Image 1: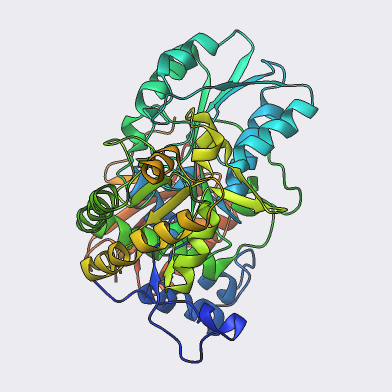
Image 2: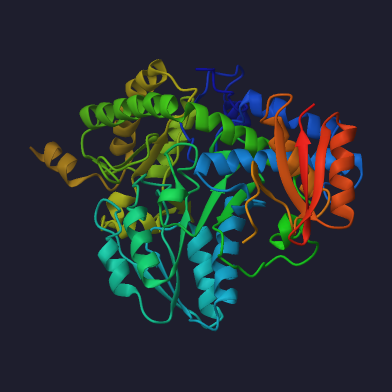
Length: 414
Length: 78
C-alpha cells in the first residue's frame, strides 16, 4: 500500500505549532486523496490533449478518446454498457439529475417519490424541491441499525409512484441497504429505482447487469479520483429529462463542455478500483475492525452506530456518551488525526444529524458522534496510534462537560 | 434491431462523427494486429469519415457494403 498523501498542516493555522506533525487521515468518506496514477493519467489532458471534445478536428478527437475510454472503464466497474454512463459534475448533480429528470419525464405517469429517512442531503433537499413543485415524497424509516425494510418500500408504493431512491450505503454510519431486494420490488411494480452509490462504487462490488437498478449515482473523489466529476448510470430504455440546457454533449443528456481531465481521472480511478477492490476491501475491513474493537474495548459508554455486519468496509462510527462529537473531532485534529462527526455545531449547540436521529438515538447521545473512515493508505500502526490517544481525549472532554453521562455520574457518587 | 453481421458487434448507426470513429478505435485497440472488426455506420459523412480515420491511423479497410440503411465496414487492425 502506498503512503496516503497528507493534506497541509492544520496545526499551523492557529500558530500553536511550529513544526508540521505527522498527520493521520481517517476521513475517507468525506474525500479520498487522488492516486498518483490518476494524476498521471489526467495530466496529458491539461498539457497536450486539451481540445474541445465536441470539435471535429484532431485536437477534439484526442479529447473525445479520453472521455470514451473513461466511459468504458466506469461501465466495466459497474457491469454496465458504456452507453449507459452519463458524466456529471458531481455525485450531487447525478442525484439531482436522477430525481428531477425522472419527475419531469414521468409527470404524466405520476407524482409520488419514495426515499429513505437517512439519505444524503443531495437526495433530501432535491426531494424537498420536488415537493415545492407539487410532488409527494414518502420517507421510509430505518431500524436502529440504519436499515431500510424492503417491505416498507413495498407498502409505500402507490399507483402514482414514479421513482424510488434508496442509497446503497450510508455516508455517516456505513449501513449497506438491501438494494437488490428493493430494486426487485420496484421492477415488479414498474417503478424506476435509483440508488445513490457514492459511498460504495469502487469499494463494494456492484453489478447492475444482475441487479434491478435503473439509475445509480457515483462520485470520483470518493474512489481516489478528482473532485468535480461524477456520473449517473442510466440503464438502457430509461428516459430522463435533462435539467441542464445547452449543447448536445453526452449524447444530449448533459449539456456543458466536458471536464475532460476530470473524466479521465474518474476513468482511471474506476479501472484501478476494479482491479484492486477485493484487496483494498480486505485491508480496510481489517483496519475498520481494529478501530471498532479497540474503541469499544477502551472507551466506556460508547455505542457503535450503523449495522454491525452490513456496513462499508471502511466505516467505523460511534456515539461517545457525554461528549460533543465536534469537540472530539477538534481535539483529535490537534493530536494529528483527521476524523469526522455527524454533529454540526451551530451557535454553540451541537445539532445531531438527521441520520443519527433516525436511528432512534436520544439527541444527547447522538451529539457525541464520531466517524472514522479508513483508506488504502492507512496502516495498523496508525490505528494503534488513534487507539492510544482517543480514550484520553474522550475522558478529558467528559471531565470538562456539564452533561456527563449518567454512568459516569453514578461513578462519581459511588 | 439491426441484423447481426458475422463477426460484427458494433452498430454505430445514429452515433455522430467523430464519436463513431472513437468507439471504433477503442474496439480496434482491444484486437491484435491483423484481427478484424466490423462496424455499421450511417451513410454519408460517417461512411466517409470512419474509414478515412482508420486508414490515417494505419488500419486497413477490408471491405465496405451498404447494409440496412447504413454502411458496413470491415476494418483490419494495422
